[in-house]
Image (tube, helix red, strand yellow):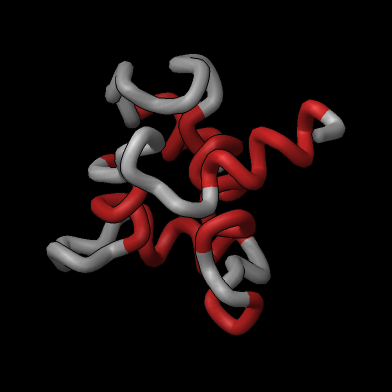
Length: 80
């Protein structure tokens, strides 16, 4: 996991500092439970996958302004 964090240099994630944590959090909020990451090897497998449909590609292309889930999650965080 630390290797993934160090080697990944993409600035356009939630806060720019913790891409792996943000990726894990995004997975929990946007995927059904059967697709949640269960361990670090699950995260690494989809993170380094060359597939155009990998979780990392989906996360990188995620547009919060178009997402139907993000406004609900933001409201939960704010207590609305």
